[in-house]
Length: 114
Image (cartoon, rainbow, N blue to C red; front, top):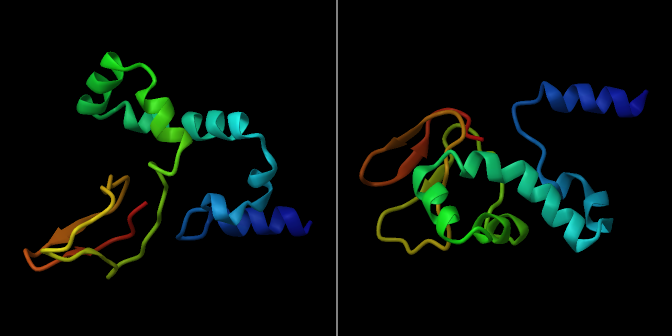
């Protein structure tokens, strides 16, 4: 019952689960975990024409991206600043849902992203 209750709460929660929320994933073999990340992230990434083209040139690209820390799901709430101008970033953002308001001074999430 506790498991079902938590699942229902998480399904209707505003934030998504991340792999840090599921510690048992660390017990999977590296190969199986890489396959899982590929199944989760590759379909969404393949919807981007530039990544589809790159994957056509290097058919291991998406697998490599998904099996490393290159691609991570992150949910943020309204008012969260994604980046500020003149700041070097070590990542790119792919907006799955919600809206981002860019003011020129910063990118501010105006609705839940993720």
